[in-house]
Length: 325
Image 1: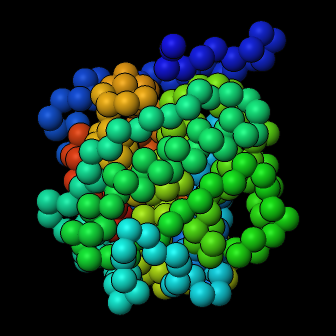
Image 2 (image 1 turned 90 degrees about the vertical axis):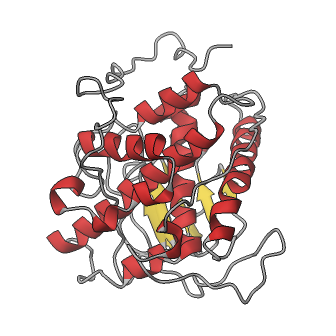
């Protein structure tokens, strides 16, 4: 079966961008100036973030929009510092509200190998939910050793393919604002069937890239990075230049975390190396965005994770402003 299936007849799709806009992207120094992620706003960051590389209102909700580039939002939700632990994680383990100094970004920390056994990808809601559920389980398994090494909590993440009118992060974004989004308040990735199929069809690489990005926001939530980013926000509507820079750093880091996972699982189970490569390349298909970063940086930060293979390669918080523009 091909890694990416063609869209059904009669469905016009824009041409896919080249794997790398710059020459020889896999050269050793391609990431000399690694890209940086974006952070969500203070009052709503804990809530939800919408879009493939878009974050807005607060740390709890992070959304990922892959096909059409629209600003997403993160919304602050009550009790966002709590969650359901898995794998015996004790309640005494707490997230660390730090950015560049977060224990997760220390030396020699990376996701572990995992064999992702994914079911067939189909258009029916139950097929999509099964596919995403298996993928999230694999993401959870892969990220476990990194969080354990950083001594940070592991929280269960779930996925829903229906759009709630409201969640722990408040009112859901519109289809024009996101293709999928993450809510930190209930640690759930919302990937509405209609939105995802309109954006990705049955392109496996695109579905995987989107969910891996959203799970990257979950990792930020688990580690305390999202809460620390929320504290950096300065305006109530997250529309100041400073706040948008924070959001870009959050979103670019989520790309990098998504690619870190792909590097860890590439070539095993249902995710072949060619499929992993295509998923990383998909991060570079978005248009320039003031909340998700330029197309070049959206891709370069993903490559930073894919080639760097450690969380430190995803430290967008220490990167110069020019690398997270």
